[in-house]
Length: 164
Image (cartoon, rainbow, N blue to C red; front, side, top):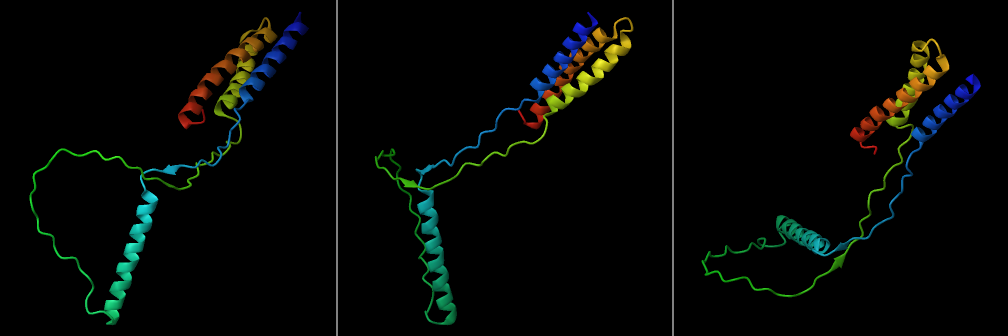
């Protein structure tokens, strides 16, 4: 009978450690191509081209090659009656390639596995000390309860850290 209980206790401890140490496989996302429907890429290239042209014109004026840089005349402010907006249909598409961030694989044991192993070992020792009549049964019961409690606490810590 004592051999059977010790074998079951060892099997239970191994089962707890094996299930607590399993980690989910991390999948690396492949590059994703996003379509630029707003035309941001075209606007940015147009803006850069205009800024460069203005800078070159300013540099030419500074060197004395041009009489004065071209400055737009102020526009007279007029008030106009507003009408309902008209809907126009048209399409504009441009594309750019943006890659999704790849996730890094987390190394080492999770806190759930650490806490379960520590709780299982501590619970087994404490259970064997408390139950003086049958130390093996006390160790098994303490190990299972301590491992379960440690797993629950470690899992909550992993959720706070963003691991799960």
